[in-house]
Image 1 (tube, rainbow, N blue to C red):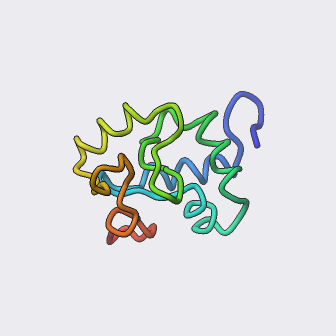
Image 2 (cartoon, rainbow, N blue to C red):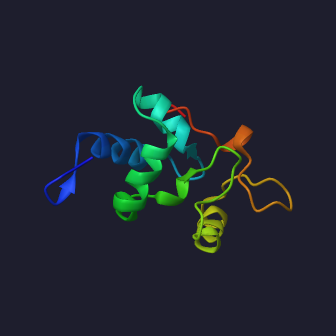
Image 3 (tube, rainbow, N blue to C red):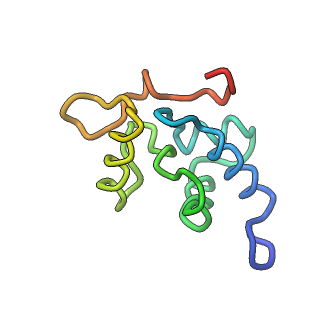
Length: 106
């Protein structure tokens, strides 16, 4: 996945998608893999764990709407700032309302 000191081609494609996710919207790890038509959720998660700090990482979540593990508090703060729809009382994103399909039109 990595070449030299920087991300490889797959990682660059993942990070490019993440940078395009609009505020208040999210994609799951699997959504990104499906959108790119390659690899799977674990590989996307690996890219995010190694290289995701420079992109809006809180917009990439588990398919059940859970924030990234270990980063829940910071993610929830950012969701509040961006008005990301949450499921009441759950601390999870409302995937039906917040999922982004990769279309720049929304």
